Length: 231
Image (cartoon, rainbow, N blue to C red; front, side, top):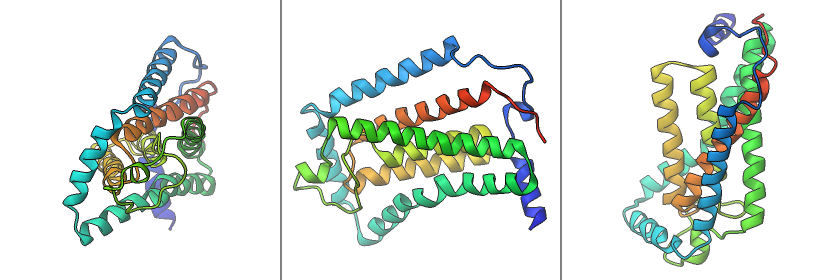
């Protein structure tokens, strides 16, 4: 058990393997450019989502569902449900490992991922309650509901969570080419499954990506304001 935890600790790196000792400016010009650009993207997608253009997206969903089989539906449902175990489970394991080994770097990185997901989820829930956009299967009888959908449609909460998690996995926890490929492939699979299962439009996915990015960069920037030395 101890050897496994040590291996996990060695693979969790940050910013070239060490932390700077001087404070990082939170409200930097680069941060604001990223934040404003992402916020503008979410706003534009929100306006698009409430327009009649979503009918075109629904037509694509109908075509995709016509190609489904029972086995493919089960596979997509499994991929969609994996969000509950991977996006929160991996950083939770890293956090527990950091607490056991008393590694501040692991604790910090895991908290950035978890809090980034939480912030993205909060923003997503606020927008959902504001726009109150129905899900594709609620407005188009041609589309079957093949998965559980929570509240309103825009943006996709699964996508928000997967995006923030993937940034955390590849930027903070496991900065290797294999980790990047596997993480991105998993996230894209989750996003695609939500569309084909009839619970989201493509616009919902794009909005979720942007919000997931916002959640991650905001929390990461806040943590960088008070860097810590590795224990």
